[in-house]
Image: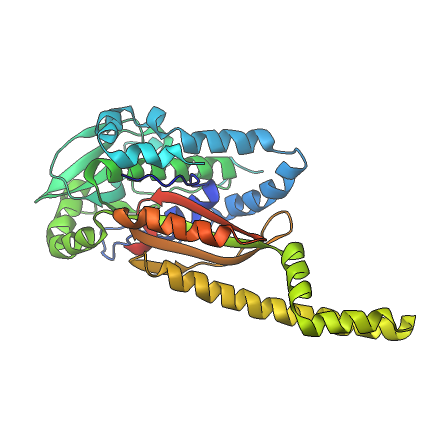
Length: 97
Length: 269
């Protein structure tokens, strides 16, 4: 169904998409987000550093634990596992890489 | 890192604070169901359904999530993604909302405000959901090995070869000038090749994608240069064709390709 093996998404792939993309609700039922510039800035800076530091053996543990968390959504969403198992995409999403 | 200062976790809000709803995504389902403690900071996530659509939410106080601690933000981003991804797999399609979308309840309650919004926007949301059904987002990056491509360009460009041969027979001072000229010529040829390759990749990908978004180039690792960085919206049945097209690009000497996904359609809603 979805045979092509491919790499799993990384935190870098997710960061911009989750923080800056997605539907924006334009209605006054939303709390004002104007005061939230900090979210992700330090993380982006840290990630840029991690790439360099990981090559020198620094922060490899942090890097590994973050990667492990990306690969383990089942553990975090047990309620959804049966539904996901019935969908061919559920498997392929983590089979790559 | 000063993680304690300026950290706001609305999930842990006191009872006195206004109640809010953190919204992850909208899905085409009408079940009222709980998904367990899978939200930000392990908050229990449930659906709020209205007329054939549902929003995945958790209860929180009406404050944005804020933290200076990269680990905390990373955990939030991952939790947000895992909820959106789980809903995407369960309902086949979703409209992900941007991080920190929190519905407040000024009058009445946040549930009413959100179901009111779902009702009001029902038609527009349904059209968007239909347009994204059966499609996934992929991150596509093409890199080249700068040293290897430089070598290949040097070998294949007659003008560069000729300059190189002339340089070899010149005295040191003059050879230096030739070297400078050669470098400029090589840089120009490589830029032209990079542009040509980018256009070719973009052209062939557009056959297999419904929508393509150009992303910022980032620095490649290990002497690799990123030539093109794209987000692609791909119908499920065309994923294999896209992959094999990219394999052909990656099989060229000096080139490598990264195809990551499938992801919920974050960049296309």
